Length: 114
Length: 111
Image (cartoon, rainbow over all chains, first blue to last red; front, side, top):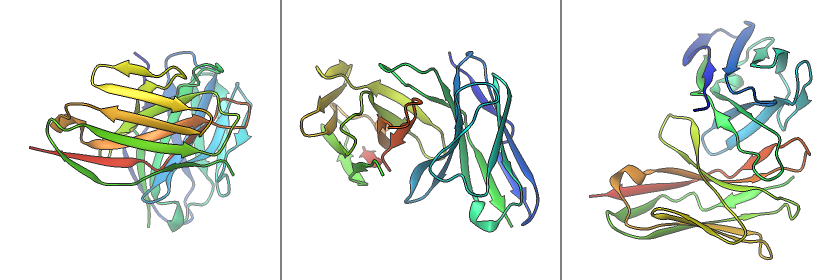
């Protein structure tokens, strides 16, 4: 079974703090993704990575950065957290394959910024 | 902006009922199609892929109409445990195996 783990299930931070969310996958997947999910807005792609040290902006990259130093690990960084970044953050991984493109999700981190 | 549109519901059905969800997608170049299931406060999980010829997995049947850019999911003999949000998903246009998710359709199955 594919396993994607995230460093925290719940996190509370203060405005202006630097926040690190970590994601690890154990299936040797090439691609990793960070999404946020908000009521009424669905899942929105923040950043993704298709290889070590490679990153691409998704639909809503503003206020976020990412790091992929190792294949199995993909970190999301909020340089200076703001209240509008309160959300559920979901990490996913998958392999590039034009016939499947399936992604597997971690359990999510519910971040509250006060 | 490529979109995936779904009726948000909720669909309220009794146990044993048959229920159908539909979604439309705007990217005519999409090649991969999926239904994901998401339980309350949990992560999305792959329910099934959707193939051009249609496919069935137990009580679940998925259909794809490329000409109309339309995907459907049929659930027969609904169970209480089918209560969840069902996300329609298509691959994106980035060339990097990104996915575009619909906002989901909520299903509530009652005794």
